Structures are given as C-alpha cells and as structure tokens.
Image (cartoon, rainbow, N blue to C red; front, side):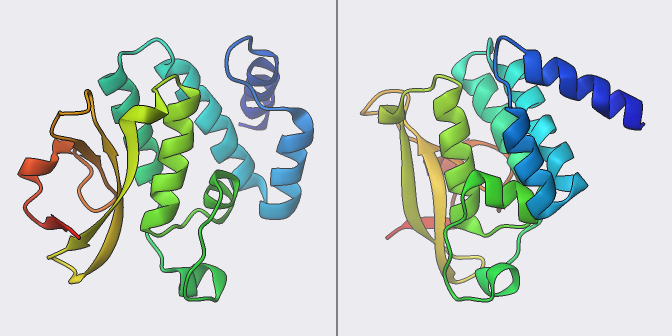
Length: 168
C-alpha cells in the first residue's frame, strides 16, 4: 500500500493539471498526520477527474467528496463556539460543520472553473434541526432557482425542492 501511495504522490505532484506541492504535503502530514496527507492527495485526484466535466458534474464530484467528512460542531472540533475552517483544516481534522463544508466546496469549485458569480454562501434555517444552517447555492443564471449543495441532504436539488430549508 505504501508503494502505491508513494507512486501516486509522484504522479500527483508532477501532474500538469491540479497538483500539490511537496512542501504543502509535508506541512499537512506534520500538522495532521498521514490520513490527512492521503485526503489531500484524494482531493487533488478528484479535482483532476472533475476538471473536464460540465458544471453539474463538477458540483456532484465536489459535493460527494466533501460530504464524506463527518459532521462535528466547532465546539467538538476546535473547542470554541464558532470557527470557520480553511479547506486544509477541513481535510486535516476530517470533521466539519456547515460553514466548513461551504468554504471547502466553494473554493474547490472556483478552482475547477465555476464562476464565482454563480456561487453563493446562503444562510438558511433547517426546519429539521431547528437551527441556522449555511449552504452553498449555485445559480446557473441570475434568475435561476438555485441548486443547493448541502451536507444535510447529499443530493443536489433546486431550492424549491428543499422543503426542510427556509431562507432567513
């Protein structure tokens, strides 16, 4: 297994598409351990697989990738009531709350070429959990009903079909 991981690392580090610098990989491994290093490689691999897909395909790949990470409150993860994690911290800790999912998805989709004018961090209320909730929304056009990328419901659906969320 180690040989496969090492061989993959060389390929990913030298990839002409999305890649990750050795110094960055070393930092991830030192700060968060081997599992985080593997997740960073998996992120780069997913991005290279998604780069030629249409916008919906990219969103599905990114949404699926980050939704594999378990939910945990900021109190559980960071020991404080509110903390907005970077994508590196998200991968490193391998747990996140709603805004962490949104940040990681937003910046990954931006890197994959989805225009930021189509992506919005949207604050809503979860009727199911009776709490505020941040989701990433995608507007194909400015007048479109947005699609919702969420860590509660893994399927990307139009906001009009997300009856468990209301805009605040």
